[in-house]
Each structure stands twice: as structure tokens, then as C-alpha cells.
Length: 120
Ligand SMILES: CC(C)(COP(=O)(O)OP(=O)(O)OC[C@H]1O[C@@H](n2cnc3c(N)ncnc32)[C@H](O)[C@@H]1OP(=O)(O)O)[C@@H](O)C(=O)NCCC(=O)NCCS
Image (cartoon, rainbow, N blue to C red; front, top):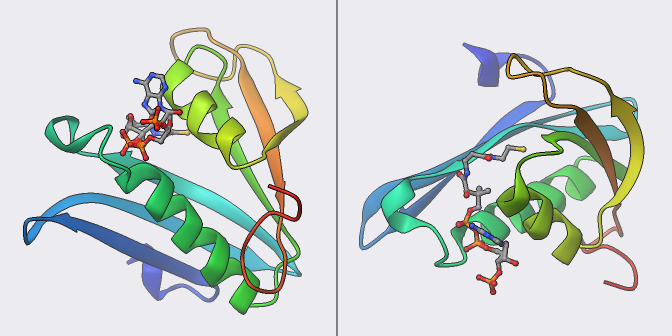
């Protein structure tokens, strides 16, 4: 099981008591990575995605990470808007990374010891 691996962790978001979204991350050598983030289609635009990301950021900072990296499809407008709102910056590009041929943007979020992006 992935979350049983060293440095890996998962967060669950609920809405009215029901599971509505989850996120997984890992921390190694002072860097964190978002492995996955998803919110049930019926629960989107309720703030769960940003809450899960803030939880990942806080958990990563608490585990000693100074930066958090993630990959997002250049075609994923919803996720890109979410990450931009948190202060993520583009740190790299992986061309035709996804099966649909879209590019992956590598994003970076700087973490403060309390989990927030400095200045965001
Ligand atoms: C991306 C995803 C996690 C967002 O979850 P969510 O709970 O709907 O996001 P939030 O409600 O927290 O939205 C936070 C902000 O992100 C942006 N955003 C979210 N969905 C958006 C959309 N469909 N279009 C434009 N902006 C969007 C907005 O800025 C939003 O703030 P606002 O509602 O005040 O305008 C969700 O759409 C999802 O699960 N998508 C499929 C899986 C996926 O793409 N995961 C990310 C892989 S990198």
C-alpha cells in the first residue's frame, strides 16, 4: 500500500460526512511531491481542492520540506487555477507527458514552516 511507504501520506476530505476528495503526497530529502489530488465531481467548487492542497502543504512543512513540487497538464485549467491561487510557479515543462499528448507543467510551491507559501 502506497501510504505505508516511508515519507508517504494521504488526506481525505469529507462533505456532509461523506468522502468527497483525497490527496496523496510524499516527502524525501527536504522536498515534497503531490502524488495525486482529486475531488468528486459533485463536490467541486466547494473549496475542498484548495483545502486538501493546504493540508498537503502543512503536512509537508511539518515533515521538514521546504518546497513542494507537482505536475499538472497544461490543459487542466481547473487545477492550474487552483495551484496559481496558492502561489505556485512554473519550474519546468515535460513535453507530451500525458497519454492525450498534453504537456506537463512542473510547478513549485515554497513552503514556510507553518505550511503557507511565503507572500501568498
Ligand atoms: C482540480 C480539482 C482538484 C479542484 O477541486 P475543487 O474542490 O473543485 O477546487 P476548489 O473548490 O478548492 O477551487 C479552488 C480554486 O481553484 C480554481 N478552480 C477550481 N475549479 C475550477 C474550474 N473548473 N475552472 C476554473 N477554476 C477553477 C478556482 O480559482 C477556485 O477558486 P474559486 O472557486 O473561489 O473560484 C478538481 O477539479 C478535480 O478533482 N479535478 C480532476 C482531477 C485533477 O485534475 N486533479 C489535479 C491533478 S494535477
